[in-house]
Length: 261
Figure 1 (cartoon, one colour):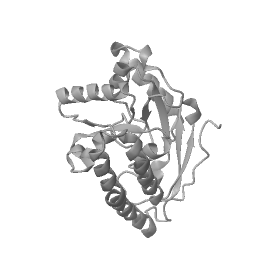
Figure 2 (cartoon, rainbow, N blue to C red; figure 1 turned 120 degrees about the vertical axis):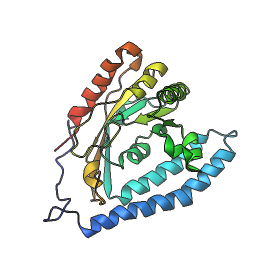
Figure 3 (cartoon, rainbow, N blue to C red; figure 1 turned 120 degrees about the horizontal axis):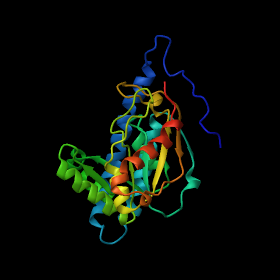
């Protein structure tokens, strides 16, 4: 396997340097696809899952439908997905998947293509949306209140409990999307969860989603996007006092694998 994905094509804009009409239409088309998936697939599956959550393992029921919807969304943006490194993981093992963050496409991309049933960290406002909030709880999505220290600590404990129960999580510790591809500094919250639960971290490098759906632009330009899963790192080797060492190590694994302007 090559150390980095093949060189990308930069033909994402017209000669004027601005997105074309088709790129803008595709951007709005992704909203249509997302809305249809939520209404036709999401709402019925969430309702059935919520009503029958005591009868079967809910994530095994809802995740295949959710992955299918996420794949449709990613494809509607014109992303051609390439995945490598999954062979580095142990099937059935719980991981914290930690990735760089380039685009709105990143969460559905990882959710759909990692081949793990993964929960996530999400801002608490999303959990207040009717039906979506119930779906988040069924899918082990942990709401985070970054504006309240005590509630943020409670979310950290909840995330650790979910990991100990065998539910993998994904997180984007930069906290925001990058425009130029440069990997920003990582926040520590999800690393506390991993250390508390003694669950290994699987670093993930995402490339070129920012060229398909770039932050601040209402356009989508079809192109190849890359997910590279790197060798897992045992969080159990670190104490809470050594958390910055773990944060730095994970970031230093990801950053060299990410292309930037």
